[in-house]
Amino acid sequence: ESNLIERTKVRASDILQATVPAERVIQGVSLALRAKRLVGGDKPLVFKEQPIPDPADVPLERIDVSNPFMNRQGQWYPYFKRLREEAPVHYQADSPFGPFWSITRYADIQAVDSNPDDFSAEPFIVLGPPPFNAEMFIAMDPPKHDVQRRAVQGVVAPRNLREMESLIRERVQDVLDNLPTDRPFDWVERVSKEITGRMLATLLDFPYEQRHKLTYWSDTISGSADATGGTTHQDDVFPAAQELARSFTALWHDKAARRAAGEPDGFDLITLMQTSEDTKDLIKKPFEFLGNLTLLIVGGNDTTRNSMSGGVLALNRFPDEFEKLKADPKLIPNMVSEIIRWQTPLAYMRRVATRDLHFRGQFIRKGDPILMWYASGNRDEAKFEDADRLIIDRKNARNHMSFGFGVHRCMGNRLAEMQLRILWEELLERFDRIEVVGEPGYVQSNFVKGYSDMQVQLTPKP
Ligand code: HEM
Image: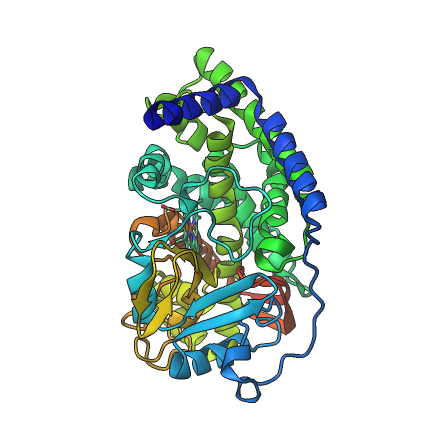
């Protein structure tokens, strides 16, 4: 009988998804959440920056690395160091996001990330509840995760990347050829955001002149105060999500019409979905359809962008490494890995214990949230010698944990690496010096480890 009920439930939701357009689904979810907030009296989180004391002055149990100003105040690394040394599996009982565990050593993070049976990625992978939880396979466990990932991963398969490479390179060249060289400018806006937006538009075959919308939607969704301590709120997020739903639905139908009219198939995600048996009717499942697209945009956006800014900053902090690079451009691929390690664009992923268990001497209860702090694991001296330094020919740079481990290991890692390799190849062709002027601005977040602005002065090659 229970089987029958399960099946009926599944069928009812399929019918709902099939008959209600994506945009309406978002609207429905928005209203339901707003009503829940009113009934429950939940207040959205708002963060005010206060000076963060040195870690040595804070009792261990009071340490809260979810403070979204940690990065801006340069405190994350000193706090992580103390946790790795004194409390590598640490419990914070009373954060604005509720209680959570922090895992800070490389080996322990790897153990948790490789064990989806005990540590579930459901229902979400950021600290607080996301404002827009469409069906994303990053927040699903096997076997459902595997089926959904398999359906879309062809878009970043090596053959497809080779197809995309020349277009991506042309778009990078165009950005770099139009940068000012007579004055400083904002690298984040002009280079990191712009190139990433172009890359994502290429991946989705999204209307090129509207590519800034991809960046805007993604920033609004990932900047949620409730989820990551950022600056956007539910009322900002839903209009963005609705517009995204409308645009992607139109993109799907437009692509279908063009293909029907005889346009040759491209190598973009929508074509891939429409030509694959598993996903050709995905438009009838708006949650899943939007989930997959949103995951690719949000997954590829802050991450690639902040690696582009972080690389420039790192080479300014360690100028000898820039000289090393200029003397031997063949170091670029290894440097790209080292930049991604040094930067760690996503500070953590969240898991939930699926049962009561002991881990490294601590008792973790079923349902407890656990943050795997990649940002800390990447600076663990037990794995990386002189871990705070950027060393572009570091032997084990590729062992960084910025892409995670196991079933959820970043699907876009090759694309991200290709994008960064192309950027640095083209930069070295053109510029002798790439100087960061003053201090960059830092993003307010406990999840995205990145930059809001960074003034840069370029000196062209003679
Ligand atoms: C998953 C980081 C670029 C798409 C992930 C995860 C991390 C991550 C930490 C989760 C790993 C885990 O839970 O074990 C990064 C970094 C990037 C980057 C640091 C750039 C330097 C991209 C790009 C795309 C992308 C360019 C696609 C356009 C995805 C997807 C997943 C994912 C789809 C989910 C994989 C799954 O759950 O099976 N990424 N990412 N990422 N990333 Fe990336």
